[in-house]
Amino acid sequence: MIHLKIWKDKVSEYVPEASTWFHHTTWNRMVLLIRWLLFSVITGGCLGLAGTFFGKSVAFVTELRTANPWILFGLPLGGILIVWMYQWESKQEKSSTNRVLDAIHAEKEIPIKTAPLIFVSTVLTHLFGGSAGREGAALQLGGSIGNFLGKCFRIDESDKRVVIMCGMSAAFSALFGTPMAAAVFSMEVVSVGIMHYAALVPCVLSSYIAGAIAKSFGMEEEHFVIGEIPELTLITGGKILILGFLCAAVSILFCVVLHKTEHLFQKKLPNPFLRTFVAGCLIIVLTLLLRTTDYLGSGMQIIEQTMEGNVMWAAFLLKILFTAITLAGGFKGGEIVPTFFVGATFGCLMGKILQISPSLAAACGMTAVFCGVTNSPISSLLIGLEMFGFKGAPFLFLSLSVSYMQSGYYGLYHSQRIVYSKVKMEYINQNTKE
Image 1: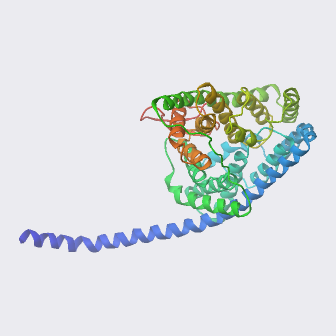
Image 2: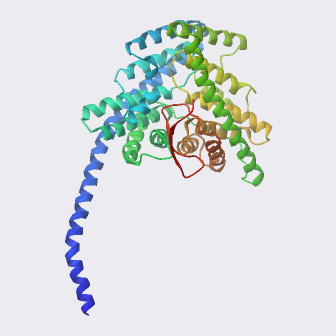
Image 3: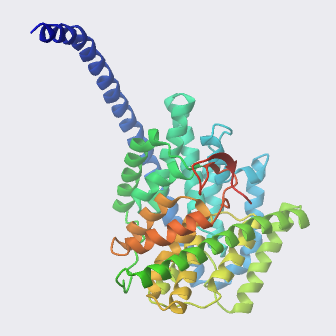
């Protein structure tokens, strides 16, 4: 009885204090949730509208170029116009996705003029047939507008970085219709080995809001149907592991060719106007020699063909070449959609060689190469699930996990930071290789 009385006295002593602490922290979390909800609605709404307008603009000029193939011959002049516009900035090369990542690392500032510059220059690139994607523009558009909104909100530096990630997620979601992947990608791509979970709620909210707005304006989600999905056995699983290993090699090749071509162009052609003119002429010559426009623009129609098992054996190599020349010449857009093209065509080819469903292999190749070049396995899996459905999830997971490990420390963005080793529980804190 004496022990029971002592216990009761202790409880009565600490419960009021604990109760006060509980109510205080709960109230703080509620205020923070409401605060981020407000910021997410504004950011998601702004980027949903901007992303929708951007996506429809790219789709419009792509249809215009497809209907009028002669527009391709204006590519060198379009490149000169892009370089001229970027003379507004002191250093053209800094207006890139790397600059957005640097801003999240609190090392650089993203001016609001980045938004109209990347918008117009990407539309011009797609109009004249440059081989580039849209996501680079989406990330820069989202980062720039997110940074501007952070200033308008007058929030501190750490929260402003969260708003930048919100903008990236919202713009990505509006363009691709993959809100889960978009929410995670902006948190995962910044620092490999860790996730900025403090940005989870605002990134998820802004991503879904932007996606809903884009959908209401008729933006179509990127979705593909896998034709045949075999049973997961030791044989089929082994083949997918081999595919993942080979996709890692392709992702390294893609990154190396892109970076080396950029350095080569800058060294041999230091004048940016001459550089972009030469790059535009090379794209025209290659297109005429190949007698196909399959490698111009984003090439999403070719990814659809891989789902039916149709692929030319050298398609992934040619897309790497076209993309490297386009981006090294100063044209704008992004590397991720070309990565989808490269991964899907290579996967489809290997599916035929390994005698496994070509459409399943194309889906695995697309997510695995994307994982290899971005070092973002969770985002890669979510993109695969949202684009291809859940039936092929085990195969997607197997291929991209191997690709993540075997792709080493190469990456599309040299400002991406590898915080922890891919193969050991070890802190390394280095930037990706070029």
